[in-house]
Image (cartoon, rainbow, N blue to C red; front, side):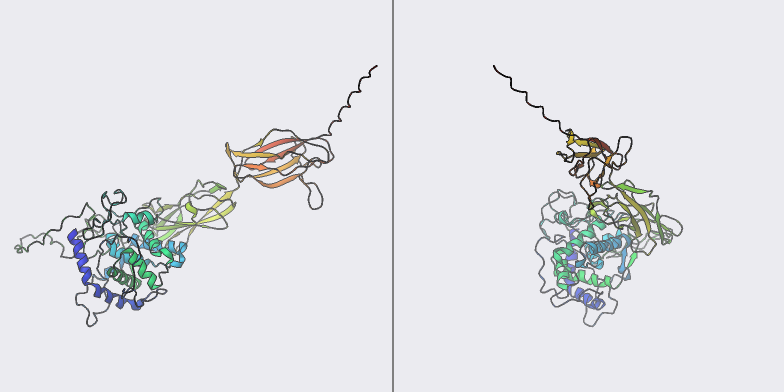
Length: 569
């Protein structure tokens, strides 16, 4: 493997002019919004200073293959420009979806960066050959680890182990990991969960692409500005040759790409780094051997030099003599997969989650489709981490299930909409409802009798606590009413009251009271009119909580006169 890396690096040194020529040939097709290279930019890269710090890849080697040119060589250009064929425009489906999802995520969270997905594709091409031609599973994780060489200072950077071998299997030195080749120490800072599975895995193309995008956008960069673009790429690998190579693929992908099935992408001329253990010592070049005479029944000839070995047949239509796989039926619709009624109390998690199924025109499940669930409407209900939308892949059964929503404080109905990313299909809408918080019990804090004189006021404030199934119930609405009796909840027309309205009429019903974070409510001051007796105050909450409190209005007893002093004689 060391010999392979060395060959790649030496080969890269001879293709600098070729890379520049490729960029120049492709630059005429700049996509809208991308500023052309300026003097000192990527084409010359003479005035660009790499950002400080360790690069993402630890300056590991990279593939130096260049995209094919659509026009004959210009006079004076090298006659051995490596042309790998029109298949280079094809990007494996899951890998392409990951790049586009990362672009959309950055557009929502860092719109000023203006990250184009073609830039991620260019970096993915030179770092791992698009995850070795798209050899990933349905969730986007590589089928086998993609590891760079041991960064032990022998020909590369010297980076001691930072992850205890968790990502790269090496407890002595670090190695670049995954389809975007993050060294573990950089992943610890920039790692992302791009596919919503709760993990941050550098071996997953969704996670790695989003992490790469956030890294490229760091520091307030605007990637439509050439200087920012150059610095972003150089921050990935401190090499101007790397900058030129990435830019050549960036320009190429902007001219047009197409989706190919996973595992069928064109591999670089130089095979990908081997992930099995430390790199071996380079072997000497073998001496040429005379060609053997043809045999009566020749075996299939091995691959030609420079052609990547074909993977063992594992899918229908692969391998010699295999039956061609049937042509996939295009995605036709997305529908409710039996979600059920979505309701939750304010502040609580929804127990039912939105579930959608993607099908083709035959009604068959379509796996590995990106489904976006979006919260729509006047609501503060959110997905985990406060997100208003999540993007998930359908499984083998064609379904995708959104994470549980957390209801906000705003009650009422709203919509959760499911759409198939990148396709113009009718969405499926789920209606969700948030109901107000409830309490099943109200208890009074303190037990002092509530008394007042006619025309006076009750001296002690009344405080109560609402609970639901024994736990404090914050944010619960409560109603306080002066009622006529235990048997009748009618509002009493006489007795204690809560202040007066604008017309001077006593207020004997209060609504809109709400418990605090500890489930507590302190009632406002209560006044007595001229009527004497025992009156009833009733507190109620949604959910069945109820409490009655007696209010006594009495005339204080006259003090007894002092006994007459006894006479003395």
